Amino acid sequence: MTVATSGDHRADIDDPVRRQRCRCRGPGEAARRVVVALAVAVAIAACSGKPRAEEATHGAASREVAPADDAAADVVRADAVRADATDAAHTASPIGDLQVRVEWPDVPVAARTSPGRTPCHTPRAPAVSPTTTWGIPDALVVVDGPPAVPAVARVTLADCALAPRLIVGTSLAITSAVDRPARLVLRKRGALDHLAAGDPLPVQLPIAGHTVTAALDAGAIYALQTDAADPEVAVIAALPGGHVTDASGHAVIRGLAAGSHAVTAWLPPRAGQPARTGRGTARIAAGELTELTVTLGP
Image (cartoon, rainbow, N blue to C red; front, side, top):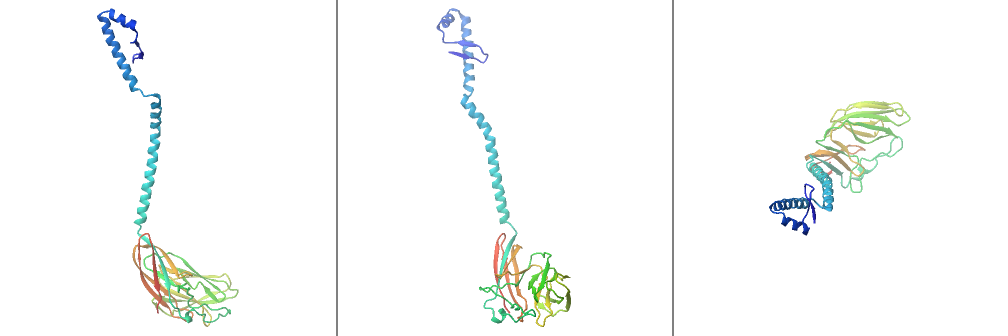
């Protein structure tokens, strides 16, 4: 067998003739045999430390793949950390939402009946038009806490009626949609829990499309009236935290601080009916929608 040593010399250890020669050359040959044996041992050690071709190939592949595997693992870990952070932020959110339902069980017939006709010979709207489950649309809901958002309350005169009948805003814009000059009256009625007659402020609308604007005092209730004997009325609430219930009698207030909030529901006096009020307390849970039902009373 021939083995390559680290010095690239070759040693033939299986040749019987050469072994015979070694036995005949005396002590110097013995020393040479020791040197050869050492060279063979070194060569065998070098061979045993060298990986096979297959192992070398797989080893190189492993060294190349490992960083990619580590990168993928890092991405997974980063995604998990972000998800945990999002969940924690949602859980620790200091705000929540509120849905208020305003109801008036067994609304009297008089309150939900039209009180007559307008000068345009159209039916006047009743004081209230409850749903089949006694939800009350067009009611004012006031919640303490949320900041005031500047908004223009826009009211339109058309067919001897004002729309919408209830609106919230920090200023007022009145527009005519009739083909003749019209005269309205704006009154400041005072506070929600203490209405006054208020001094009349004339509003002239000479032509269709004409708009008149007015500044409103924060916290006050205003009434805009037609000039008929039985006037149609639109109520404007310049109240922070004020909302109007939808056709189902609900109002959704978003971004409330977690904790307790006083809630007031108010149906304005109109169509010959007095105002009605209901109160409640909403306990807002962080990151959740809280539901509250407020019942109107005298």
